[in-house]
Amino acid sequence: MTRPRGEGITDGERYDAGMAVRREVLSDAHVDRATANQTELTEEFQHFISRYAWGEVWTRPGLDRRMRSVAVITALIARGHHEELAMHLRAALRNGLTVDEVKEVILQSAIYCGVPDANSAFRIAQEVYGSES
Image (tube, rainbow, N blue to C red; front, side, top):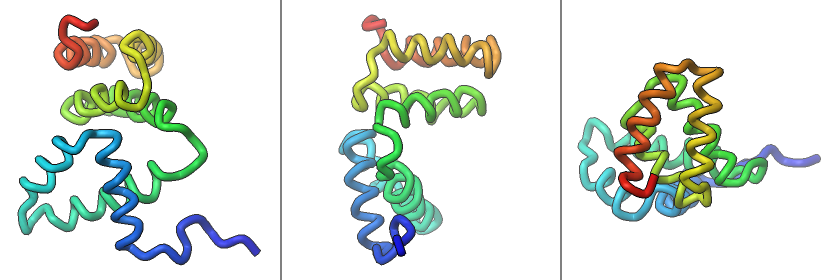
């Protein structure tokens, strides 16, 4: 009988794995800022996202990081989460996407998420990538 993924892994091990991926994807500087700015109010949330989003989902073998970035960028465009979008546009390059590939993801999102959402995403991408794009 196969054990479900993650069974037998402690929350501490899942947190450590999540922090390693989070640092690789978002950068040490970003994660250091996030942890330095945590308060008693936000500390449990920071641990939760490190364990669950990064330690449980981003560590799964089913998609590589490039594909995960595409999925995340599309979802953030669809939901209008602009602050998170800027962060994940930077992360997409760290995950191996090119600016041209990000452009294609945003163009594709115009059809399924809406032109105004894609327009906002292009504005944010221009701010993030600057003269590179």
